[in-house]
Length: 164
Image (cartoon, rainbow, N blue to C red):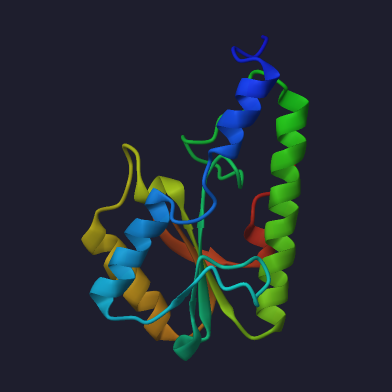
Protein backbone atom coordinates (compact mmCIF):
# COMPACT_ATOMS: atom_id res chain seq x y z
CA UNK A 1 0.00 0.00 0.00
CA UNK A 2 1.37 3.41 -0.95
CA UNK A 3 1.58 6.28 1.48
CA UNK A 4 -1.44 8.59 1.32
CA UNK A 5 0.86 11.64 1.49
CA UNK A 6 3.62 12.79 -0.81
CA UNK A 7 7.17 12.75 0.59
CA UNK A 8 7.19 16.48 1.54
CA UNK A 9 3.85 16.26 3.39
CA UNK A 10 4.91 13.09 5.24
CA UNK A 11 8.20 14.73 6.22
CA UNK A 12 6.37 17.83 7.52
CA UNK A 13 3.97 15.65 9.53
CA UNK A 14 6.82 13.64 11.07
CA UNK A 15 8.75 16.80 12.04
CA UNK A 16 5.65 18.03 13.89
CA UNK A 17 5.74 15.07 16.30
CA UNK A 18 7.05 16.49 19.56
CA UNK A 19 9.84 14.90 21.57
CA UNK A 20 9.26 16.85 24.77
CA UNK A 21 6.30 18.25 26.69
CA UNK A 22 4.08 15.59 25.16
CA UNK A 23 0.64 14.92 26.64
CA UNK A 24 1.90 11.80 28.41
CA UNK A 25 4.89 13.68 29.86
CA UNK A 26 2.59 16.44 31.11
CA UNK A 27 0.36 13.86 32.80
CA UNK A 28 3.33 12.25 34.58
CA UNK A 29 4.66 15.69 35.60
CA UNK A 30 1.28 16.53 37.14
CA UNK A 31 1.24 13.23 39.07
CA UNK A 32 4.79 13.77 40.34
CA UNK A 33 3.86 17.30 41.45
CA UNK A 34 0.77 16.01 43.27
CA UNK A 35 3.03 13.59 45.15
CA UNK A 36 5.38 16.44 46.06
CA UNK A 37 8.46 15.16 44.20
CA UNK A 38 11.11 17.48 42.77
CA UNK A 39 12.60 16.52 39.40
CA UNK A 40 14.60 17.76 36.45
CA UNK A 41 12.98 17.38 33.04
CA UNK A 42 14.89 16.14 29.98
CA UNK A 43 18.15 15.63 31.87
CA UNK A 44 20.83 16.08 29.17
CA UNK A 45 23.72 14.80 31.27
CA UNK A 46 22.27 11.28 31.65
CA UNK A 47 22.18 8.51 29.04
CA UNK A 48 18.95 8.57 27.04
CA UNK A 49 18.03 12.05 28.27
CA UNK A 50 15.36 10.79 30.74
CA UNK A 51 12.05 12.63 30.77
CA UNK A 52 12.32 13.00 34.55
CA UNK A 53 15.33 12.67 36.86
CA UNK A 54 14.79 12.62 40.62
CA UNK A 55 18.27 13.19 42.04
CA UNK A 56 17.21 12.78 45.66
CA UNK A 57 16.04 9.22 44.92
CA UNK A 58 18.68 8.44 42.26
CA UNK A 59 16.01 7.40 39.79
CA UNK A 60 14.85 8.38 36.33
CA UNK A 61 11.54 8.04 34.52
CA UNK A 62 10.99 7.59 30.80
CA UNK A 63 7.59 7.95 29.15
CA UNK A 64 7.74 5.70 26.12
CA UNK A 65 5.38 5.82 23.18
CA UNK A 66 4.21 2.27 22.47
CA UNK A 67 4.75 2.60 18.71
CA UNK A 68 8.18 4.26 18.79
CA UNK A 69 9.59 1.88 21.41
CA UNK A 70 7.78 -1.32 20.34
CA UNK A 71 5.64 -2.14 23.33
CA UNK A 72 3.68 -5.37 23.05
CA UNK A 73 0.24 -3.82 23.51
CA UNK A 74 -2.83 -2.82 21.54
CA UNK A 75 -1.32 0.58 20.63
CA UNK A 76 1.55 -0.98 18.65
CA UNK A 77 0.73 -1.81 15.04
CA UNK A 78 3.24 -2.67 12.33
CA UNK A 79 2.87 -0.01 9.62
CA UNK A 80 1.38 -1.18 6.35
CA UNK A 81 3.53 1.18 4.26
CA UNK A 82 7.33 1.26 4.20
CA UNK A 83 7.24 -1.64 6.64
CA UNK A 84 10.95 -2.49 6.39
CA UNK A 85 11.95 1.13 7.02
CA UNK A 86 9.71 1.42 10.09
CA UNK A 87 10.72 -1.92 11.57
CA UNK A 88 14.40 -0.95 11.21
CA UNK A 89 13.75 2.48 12.75
CA UNK A 90 11.84 1.01 15.70
CA UNK A 91 14.47 -1.71 16.16
CA UNK A 92 17.17 0.96 16.42
CA UNK A 93 15.07 2.79 19.04
CA UNK A 94 14.75 -0.44 21.06
CA UNK A 95 18.50 -1.09 20.82
CA UNK A 96 19.21 2.47 21.97
CA UNK A 97 16.76 2.03 24.89
CA UNK A 98 18.55 -1.15 25.98
CA UNK A 99 21.93 0.58 25.82
CA UNK A 100 20.71 3.64 27.74
CA UNK A 101 19.05 1.60 30.50
CA UNK A 102 22.20 -0.51 30.88
CA UNK A 103 24.36 2.63 31.10
CA UNK A 104 22.02 4.19 33.67
CA UNK A 105 22.19 1.00 35.77
CA UNK A 106 26.00 1.08 35.56
CA UNK A 107 25.94 4.67 36.83
CA UNK A 108 23.78 3.63 39.80
CA UNK A 109 20.43 4.99 38.59
CA UNK A 110 17.14 3.14 38.87
CA UNK A 111 14.91 3.31 35.81
CA UNK A 112 11.13 3.43 35.46
CA UNK A 113 9.51 3.19 32.05
CA UNK A 114 5.91 4.33 31.86
CA UNK A 115 4.33 3.10 28.64
CA UNK A 116 1.94 5.30 26.68
CA UNK A 117 -0.85 2.68 26.97
CA UNK A 118 -0.86 3.16 30.76
CA UNK A 119 -1.42 6.90 30.28
CA UNK A 120 -3.89 7.12 27.42
CA UNK A 121 -6.30 5.01 25.44
CA UNK A 122 -9.09 2.63 26.31
CA UNK A 123 -7.02 0.61 28.82
CA UNK A 124 -5.23 3.48 30.59
CA UNK A 125 -4.76 3.42 34.34
CA UNK A 126 -6.60 5.96 36.47
CA UNK A 127 -4.57 8.79 37.98
CA UNK A 128 -4.87 7.50 41.54
CA UNK A 129 -3.48 4.08 40.56
CA UNK A 130 -0.63 5.69 38.62
CA UNK A 131 0.17 8.01 41.50
CA UNK A 132 0.30 5.09 43.94
CA UNK A 133 2.61 3.10 41.65
CA UNK A 134 4.90 6.12 41.13
CA UNK A 135 5.12 6.90 44.83
CA UNK A 136 5.62 3.24 45.74
CA UNK A 137 8.44 2.74 43.24
CA UNK A 138 10.23 6.04 43.89
CA UNK A 139 10.18 5.66 47.67
CA UNK A 140 11.07 1.93 47.66
CA UNK A 141 14.57 2.87 46.52
CA UNK A 142 15.39 -0.39 44.80
CA UNK A 143 15.11 -2.02 41.40
CA UNK A 144 13.94 -0.79 38.05
CA UNK A 145 10.40 -1.23 36.76
CA UNK A 146 7.90 -0.53 34.02
CA UNK A 147 4.25 0.44 34.12
CA UNK A 148 1.85 -0.68 31.42
CA UNK A 149 -1.87 -1.40 31.30
CA UNK A 150 -1.32 -4.47 33.49
CA UNK A 151 0.26 -2.37 36.24
CA UNK A 152 3.86 -2.45 37.42
CA UNK A 153 6.46 -5.12 36.71
CA UNK A 154 10.19 -5.48 37.21
CA UNK A 155 12.50 -4.13 34.51
CA UNK A 156 15.88 -5.44 33.49
CA UNK A 157 17.69 -4.53 30.31
CA UNK A 158 16.87 -7.99 29.04
CA UNK A 159 13.13 -7.41 29.56
CA UNK A 160 12.96 -4.57 27.06
CA UNK A 161 11.33 -5.70 23.81
CA UNK A 162 13.58 -7.65 21.45
CA UNK A 163 14.61 -5.89 18.29
CA UNK A 164 12.70 -7.05 15.28
